[in-house]
Length: 87
Ligand SMILES: [Zn+2]
Image 1 (cartoon, rainbow, N blue to C red):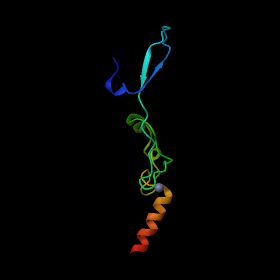
Image 2: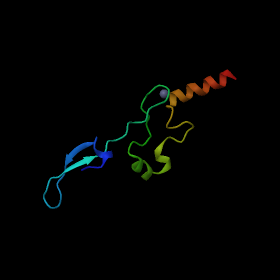
Image 3: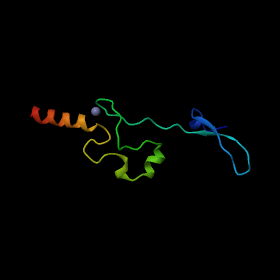
Protein backbone atom coordinates (compact mmCIF):
# COMPACT_ATOMS: atom_id res chain seq x y z
CA UNK A 1 0.00 0.00 0.00
CA UNK A 2 1.16 3.45 -0.88
CA UNK A 3 1.58 6.24 1.66
CA UNK A 4 -1.68 8.24 2.10
CA UNK A 5 -0.02 11.42 0.83
CA UNK A 6 0.91 9.78 -2.49
CA UNK A 7 -2.43 8.05 -3.19
CA UNK A 8 -3.91 10.90 -5.22
CA UNK A 9 -0.77 11.16 -7.36
CA UNK A 10 0.05 9.75 -10.76
CA UNK A 11 1.01 6.09 -11.14
CA UNK A 12 3.96 5.23 -13.34
CA UNK A 13 5.84 2.06 -14.18
CA UNK A 14 9.61 2.11 -13.95
CA UNK A 15 12.07 -0.63 -14.69
CA UNK A 16 14.09 -1.85 -11.73
CA UNK A 17 17.61 -3.31 -11.95
CA UNK A 18 16.03 -6.74 -11.44
CA UNK A 19 14.04 -6.38 -14.67
CA UNK A 20 10.62 -5.87 -13.07
CA UNK A 21 8.12 -3.10 -13.87
CA UNK A 22 6.46 -2.24 -10.55
CA UNK A 23 3.87 0.54 -10.23
CA UNK A 24 5.25 3.64 -8.52
CA UNK A 25 3.25 6.60 -7.25
CA UNK A 26 4.51 10.11 -7.93
CA UNK A 27 3.62 13.04 -5.70
CA UNK A 28 1.66 15.85 -7.35
CA UNK A 29 3.41 19.16 -7.98
CA UNK A 30 1.95 22.17 -6.15
CA UNK A 31 0.33 24.94 -8.17
CA UNK A 32 2.36 27.77 -9.66
CA UNK A 33 2.40 30.85 -7.41
CA UNK A 34 0.16 33.65 -8.66
CA UNK A 35 -0.11 37.39 -8.09
CA UNK A 36 -2.37 38.21 -5.13
CA UNK A 37 -3.90 41.15 -6.99
CA UNK A 38 -4.37 40.21 -10.66
CA UNK A 39 -3.85 36.43 -10.62
CA UNK A 40 -1.06 36.34 -13.20
CA UNK A 41 1.49 33.56 -12.77
CA UNK A 42 4.65 34.79 -11.08
CA UNK A 43 8.02 34.17 -12.64
CA UNK A 44 11.23 33.73 -10.70
CA UNK A 45 9.56 31.59 -8.04
CA UNK A 46 10.24 27.93 -7.29
CA UNK A 47 7.56 25.37 -8.00
CA UNK A 48 7.89 22.11 -6.14
CA UNK A 49 7.26 20.25 -2.94
CA UNK A 50 8.39 21.78 0.33
CA UNK A 51 11.55 19.65 0.33
CA UNK A 52 12.43 20.69 -3.23
CA UNK A 53 11.92 24.36 -2.35
CA UNK A 54 14.12 23.98 0.74
CA UNK A 55 16.92 22.53 -1.39
CA UNK A 56 17.21 25.71 -3.45
CA UNK A 57 19.05 28.78 -2.22
CA UNK A 58 17.15 31.65 -0.66
CA UNK A 59 17.75 34.00 -3.59
CA UNK A 60 16.32 31.46 -6.05
CA UNK A 61 12.98 31.17 -4.24
CA UNK A 62 11.52 34.60 -5.10
CA UNK A 63 12.47 37.98 -6.60
CA UNK A 64 14.44 40.08 -4.12
CA UNK A 65 12.35 43.26 -4.53
CA UNK A 66 9.73 44.24 -1.94
CA UNK A 67 6.61 41.99 -2.03
CA UNK A 68 8.49 39.70 -4.45
CA UNK A 69 6.72 36.35 -4.75
CA UNK A 70 3.41 37.94 -3.68
CA UNK A 71 2.61 40.70 -6.21
CA UNK A 72 3.72 40.92 -9.85
CA UNK A 73 5.86 43.88 -10.87
CA UNK A 74 3.02 45.81 -12.60
CA UNK A 75 0.67 45.52 -9.61
CA UNK A 76 3.46 46.54 -7.22
CA UNK A 77 4.25 49.61 -9.31
CA UNK A 78 0.57 50.63 -9.41
CA UNK A 79 0.20 50.10 -5.65
CA UNK A 80 3.30 52.16 -4.85
CA UNK A 81 2.14 55.05 -7.03
CA UNK A 82 -1.34 54.90 -5.47
CA UNK A 83 0.17 54.88 -1.96
CA UNK A 84 2.40 57.88 -2.64
CA UNK A 85 -0.40 59.90 -4.26
CA UNK A 86 -2.79 59.27 -1.36
CA UNK A 87 -0.39 60.88 1.15
ZN1 LIG B 1 -0.49 41.39 -10.48
